Length: 260
Image (cartoon, rainbow, N blue to C red; front, side, top):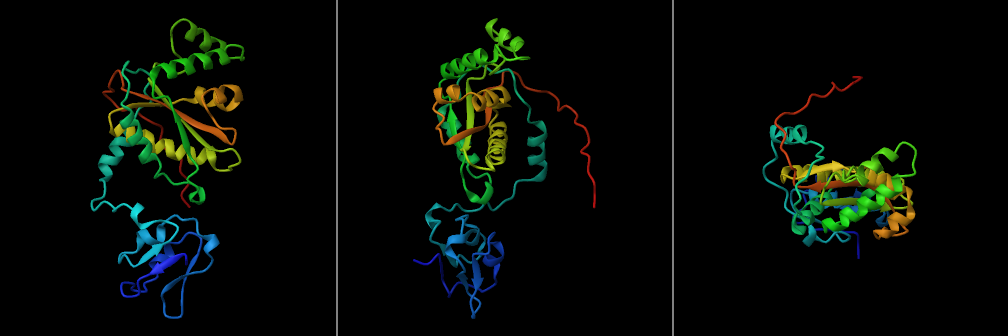
């Protein structure tokens, strides 16, 4: 079966799909119709199919039934900018679990984040049960205790102040292939997608740097929550219902920019 199928009645031979292909796996034949160059080069990103305004092309590595219609209306810049500026790192959460369906919806959005070479390598471990979150928090606090500079935080945890998870009912841990050069980048983008989607949902999120560091630096601790040996921990987010709402957006320093 050939890589692409082209309906020559619908194709306008405009070359749009050829320009959109990130790896040049499509070219024009003598009549101007798109044909595959090297099927092994295709990364199954679906760009060629998605960009065709005439619906004239199918890629046999990406089933047409899996495509979604593109929104007719673009999100306004003002609304998007407002969401991104108002997003806060939440460190006080209500003692209320987030429905698993809501967490699954956020993860479903995160899978649309770009990944290097369309590997779509990011997977997740989620503590759906708040009790599992508390157990993991306690185990990480024990890991911190003998570490220079971390003892104070571990003692805070022992005294009832959850410095690790900040009382969040859930933590979402992003994994990538252990041998990937782009795992950290792919995970950061995916978690950023998830974070903004959570903010739009009214949920509070905070990047769990201590969780990431602990799981990435302690194979036994990572294995205890089911991290496979062929995966590495590349990021984590605490998530839950925010206990308080922010009234203002704090200022940020101007971005240093060199214009060329």
